[in-house]
Image 1 (spheres, rainbow, N blue to C red):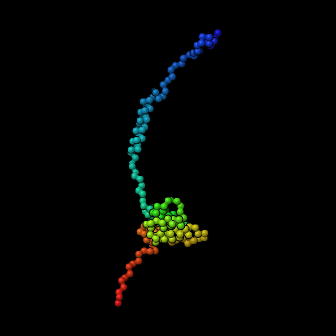
Image 2 (tube, rainbow, N blue to C red):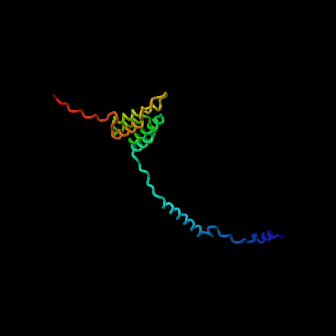
Image 3 (cartoon, rainbow, N blue to C red):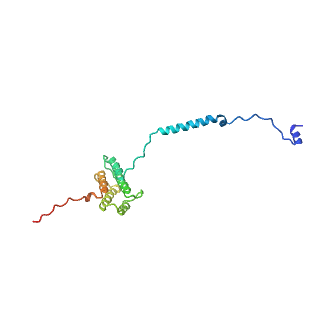
Length: 183
């Protein structure tokens, strides 16, 4: 009789020959080496980060300074429709940042309504801004060759200066009249 029948008669399970013990896992064998390597790697990362020079964040410039820097980059370029469009974009961005309007793309009329609604803006400066933007829009969207505005970059810089001071280029203070002599 084979052994299986015998174990069935005796109600004993069939035992297979025993195997040797399982070898220890990698972590059990090299746990101190793994911990030391992880600590060394962490230490190297921290040392490397501490050696990098600290660079403070770039200073936030006022809108007028940002616009002037952008216009300075366009100063010596030939006057084209693309330059007019870029100057218009810079002036729109300056106006929106100055009056704290959301940065969405506003039409000239929407932007001018926001400028007029702003309390601290001089009416003459707002009018000069509107005329400048309308002139740029006419040059950008004209169907036929349209004469480009002359000296657009320098005019935009003057507009920023006058907008900052609160008066427009067309309404600079007139010299005081000499007193009349009665005689």
